[in-house]
Length: 445
Image 1 (cartoon, helix red, strand yellow):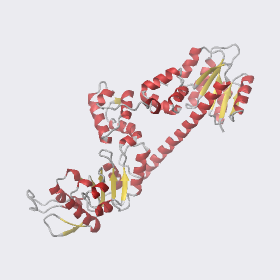
Image 2: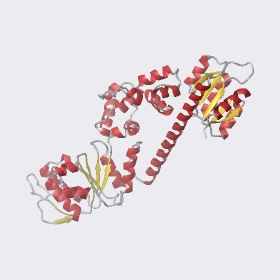
Image 3: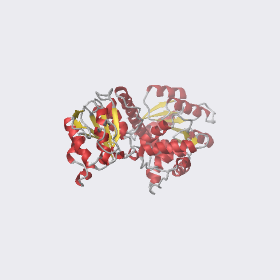
Image 4: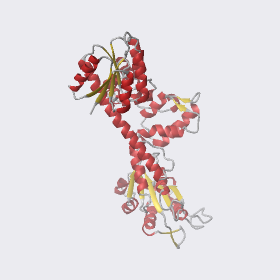
C-alpha cells in the first residue's frame, strides 16, 4: 500500500489532502507538528512526505520547514519530500529544492498538478527501492562468492561478469576441460586462474602458454618438449609445458592458432594422457587439467578445415563465454579505481563520463592502458578527458532520451527549475537514474 505522510498544523489541510489521496487509492497519515511527523517516520513505512514550512502562528520565514526537511533528509536520504506553504519566500523553497526536495507547491494547490506530482514521485520511489534492493542483493551475492571461493583479486560489478565467475567457481573442482571464449583483452586468463585456484589441484602448477605466439615449427616442442638435436638449434633437452604442468593446470590461450599437427598430438594427450617429446620414442604420461581460451570462431574454423572437430568437442566439455567490456559497463568504474589504486591520481567527472561513452574495442586491456597513459600525462593528479586519448564516436541522435548527455541533463534541470523528478520525467528516466547521471557528470543535486 502506498503511504504518504502529511505534516501540517492546519487540520483542514490534512483532511483535504487525505480525502484527495483516498479517492486515488493512496493511504495517508497526518501529523500536526514536525516532532509528530518525525515520530511517525521512525515507526511507519512511508513512501513520500508532504510538509508545511511554517508551524508557529504569525511565522512566515519557512525556517521551521527547512529544519524539518533537513531532519527528514538526515534520517531518510532517499525519501521524496514535497514542500507546501502559502508564505515562504520563493528563494527559500528553491534552496531546499537544490538541497534535494522533490517539489514545491503553493497553497492553495491545484489538485490535478499535486496528484500528478505525487503519482510520479511514488512511482519513482518504488523504482528506487527496487534498484536499491537489486544493488543490495548483488553486493550480498558478491560477498558470499568471495567468502566461498578464491576470486584471484578479480574486480567486477556487472551481472554478466558475476554469472561467468559463479559458473567458473562451480565447475572448478571438476576435471572436465573448459573452453573460455571471448574477445582479446576481456580477461579470459583471469577466469582460467579462478578455475585453477578453486580446483582440487590448486596447490599444483598453473602453466599458461599463448599458442598464438608460437611459431608453427616450435609449437609441438613448446607443448610436449624436445630432445637435444630434435631440430635445428635444439642444443639441449627442452621440457614441455605438459611436463611442467603435471599434476596441475595447463592453460592454452589462443588455442585456435595451434597448427593441425599440434592439434593431433594435443587430442591424443587429452584422450589418453600420453605424449612423446619431439625426437623421442619414449611415451610419457601427464595428469593435467586443460583449460583453453580463444577469441576465434572455432565452429567456422572447423567448417574451413582449420580446426579439428574432435579436438573442439574434447576441449569444449564446458564453455565459459566472457562478454566484451562494452556489454558489462558496470565493470568500468571499479576497474578504473583498481588500476589507479596505487597512485595519487583521480578521475574528473568528465573523464569518468568519457570512460562510459567509449565502446572499448580493446576491452579491459585497453582500459588499463588508457588509464596508465592518462596517469602519466595528467596535470595536478586529476585525469581530464584529453589525457585519456580516446576517440569516442558520437552517439545516435536519440541519446538525449535514451542516454542523455551532460548538456541534455543540465537543460532539463534548468527547464524544471532544478526539480529532479520533473527533469527525470522529461528525459524519460527514473529519478534514481537521473541522480546517477548527475553524479557521473559532477552536477550538484
